[in-house]
Length: 383
Image (cartoon, rainbow, N blue to C red; front, side, top):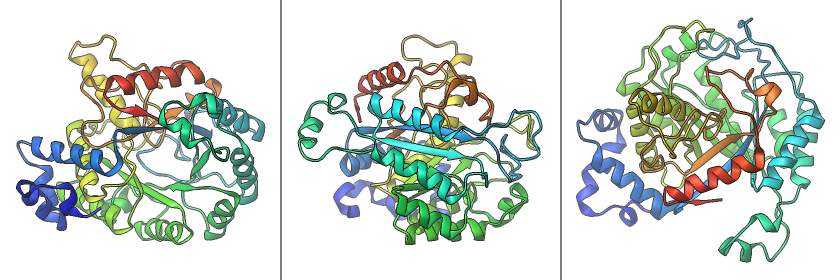
């Protein structure tokens, strides 16, 4: 979509700031961000419409060979029970999600070499055979299903792997791959990731693009040592790749990691980053991330609010798991158009602890219906 299709003349100064790190940093730190939020929401509406895409996420292994200093799954954390779901458990979870109406299954894990390329490819092929029931589709979408049966899309998020693995999964039917870069500052990346480099992460992202994946990345807002200029680097990297989806959310300190005790990221700055991402990538899928949902829920509770707008633990999230609560205001008013819902079996999901969160018991069908109702209450269309 061309820039002049989505912005009137009076918003041109905002767009002029999107071409440089300094310009984006100045946008992010504006005293009054209202005009940017409004433009991001207008851009979202005209580029991707009012649809909110619901994804079902299965966290099938919390085993990880990495030592990322912010992540509760890092291999040095001895305080969480490690698990691997069986093939049968993964497929049963996917089947339940598809029957509930989810059109995308997200397969996420730590970097676990137990799941070889062929082992995961077999699971992907089986999920791609599943059929989305017509009875779960309503309105104009039902007419679109008059043709061939629909099968779910599959998103994989298993970290850095050899090109051969990515090729095998793509041939097996994987549609998307999510690999967050976390920070585009090389020095900060090195401090946070003893086991890898930013250069290698970007190489993987470009490989995924070459193989035809709908490629996603993303980053945390509020990491120790981060500045508005590094956030600008993050946003421009999303555009450079370019990404078709991006998960952006605030850093949450995990007490079982080396960054225990660091202050959590600012939810307002995270929302601003999502809004700028929408302007840079008008047609991208931008999730309402888990971490933003969790911290927004905490802020809401601290303010003493509550009521029917609450979505309990596990209701909405980003590219990892589902969060604590959606914000009291319209959570989609700053450019987001995707929600990911955890459908990991109850006996495993508490152990998938990237950062601390509480989750209610899973009711795949009921949770989906509740989430659809909330999305409609925000003036959006769940899909």
